[in-house]
Image 1 (cartoon, rainbow, N blue to C red):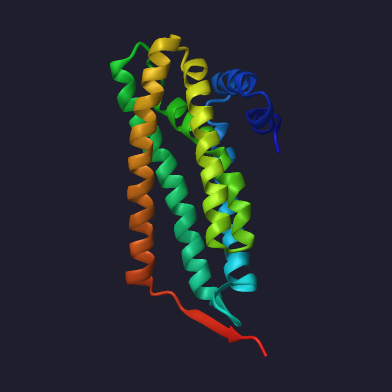
Image 2: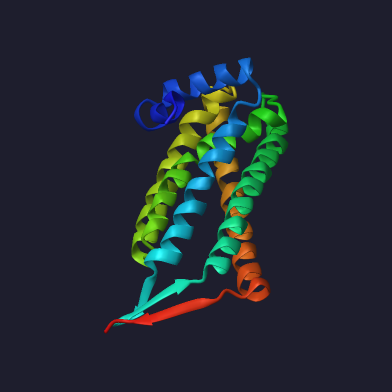
Length: 203
C-alpha cells in the first residue's frame, strides 16, 4: 500500500492533508488509486466464485462458470469506477451550496479515497459467504462514513460547521447512488447476461 492509503487507516486527518497536497502537485494522481484498487474486489470475487464457491444446501457447492464470473467481475469493476465518477460529480454539484469551490478532478479524487475501505473489503470475495459479506461490508460502510466526515472539511478547506453539513449531504446522495447502481448491475447480470452455475455434490 502507498503511504496515504496506510494513513487513511492509522492517521486519517494527516492522510487527507497529504492527499490534498499530492492532488495539488499532481492533479490526476488518484486515477491509479482508483483503477488499481478497484481491481481488488473484482479479482477476489472471480477467484472466490470460480474456485471456492458457496453452499446453498448440505453437501452441495455452487460455483460460477469462468465465463459468467468474468462477466460479473468486469461489470463490478465498471460499476465501481462509474459509481465513483458519479459520486464525484454529485460532490461537485453540491459544493455550489457551500463556500468551497473544488474542481471536478478534486471531487472524484476525494470520492475515490473515501471508498478505499470498500476496495480493501473486496478481499472477502475470496470466500463467498453471505454473513461474511454483511460483516465486512458493514465495517467498510462505517469506516467510509468516518473518512467522509473527517476528511471533507480538511480536503475541501471548508469550515467545520459547513463541512459537517456538506458531509451529511454527500452521505445521503452517496447512499442513493450506491443502491441504485448496484441494483442496476445485479439486474443486468441476472436478466441480460444470465449467469451459468456449476453444482457439485460431496461424495
